[in-house]
Amino acid sequence: MLYGPDEGDPRLRKNVAAWLTSFYQPETEISDARIAITGGASQNLACLLQVFTDPVYTRNVWIVSPSYMLAFRIFDDSGFHKKQRAVPEDDEGIDIEFLRREIRKSEEKAVNEGNDAPHIKPPRPWGKAYRHIIYAVPTFSNPSFKTMSLRRREELVRVAREYDALIITDDVYDFLQWPSNPKATNLSSDKAILPRVVDVDRFLDGGAEREGADGFGNAVSNGSFSKICGPGLRTGWAEGTEKLAYGVSQTGSSRSGGAPSQLTATFVAETLETGELQHFVFNTLQPTYGRRYQKIMTAINKELVPLGVVLPQTDRDVVGGYFIWLTLPEPLRGAVVAQRAKESENLIVAHGEIFEVPGDTEFAHFERGLRICFAWEDEKILAEGIERLASVVRSFQNGEGGAGSGEMKPGEQEAVKDFW
Ligand SMILES: Cc1ncc(COP(=O)(O)O)c(C=O)c1O
Image (cartoon, rainbow, N blue to C red; front, side, top):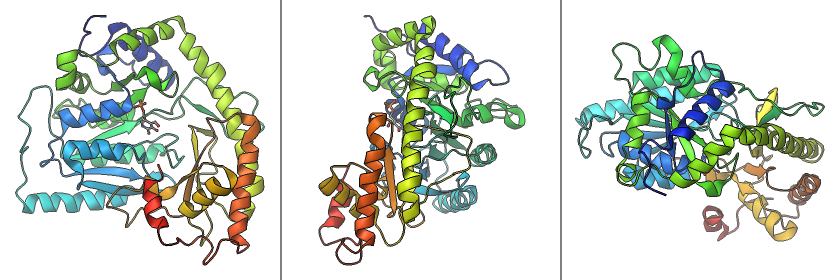
């Protein structure tokens, strides 16, 4: 019950490092020093911004979009309200050419404005101000359900190195994976399908700590026990270069209070040491969520696809996470469908516009998007949920939706943004 070390409970750091090494199988093992224990991915995103950005010098936060909407306020809180930029995805994940082009423009603007040194934050040996932040959920993304290809991960690291960007990835769904094939009987697998962006940065072209580089690297992985153990634990970890992991542990609030989640970190350390947590993930969560996924996908293919609903990345062998992203056929609008689903079918789905980056929707707008969650409800009622959603879609298509089938009525526009 005392204050703990800034970097977090040593036993949890050691056990996390060993588990990540066995799951991601990097070329060389992950050292404890690459791990800092956090208060979860959200809390640590705030800490990373505190130590590694300057609200003036850091030009932009580039957010792969549609995006995890609760991250927006974390960027706002660090002074990036007007600097959030959306980066669209294609079928392979992030649109790298778009990102490169827009970063270049942002750099030209900074040069014209003479923005060439950190303005607000003092220099500190454990931190630095990156010129850009890139935020992504590369594997089984919330909300887009997509997985970024290895090729894109490599390109992303190269762009980040070229423009002094820190890529922050929420790798919170990676462990929740299973085969997409509905006939697959073994839904359990204890090896990751792809290296994380932080793994790519660690080894690509001489690695993050190559000669001439400053040693902080260009990627950090935000891990969390929220989805694999329990969100109330408020415990997670960050992995990056040893210099970066130490740097984030030096956030003022950790320096004063010790690592957040000190008490619960010791509980989690125990479950990893006994193997109980790994057993739970591979033998309970993966098969349970895998079955729910297969039930809901069977229903989607039967009920929604014939109505013109489209899914992303349908050719993957391995899928996972909590969510599936649907694109409705024209002219249906997600917000209107979600509202009617709630009112007439007592069915909750999240509509695409809540995942748009505030103030930057020109190239990434999702008015036909819907995010559905298969992780929460019992597998027995998932098919019925999809049947109810299909009946809502059909009601619009049959002209029962009032003017324009899915057009917004006056007053509904405001409701859209308040939905969540
Ligand atoms: C992409 C993403 N990041 C972060 C979180 C929150 O993680 P934590 O509970 O570790 O703060 C979630 C939870 O929904 C999420 O989907």
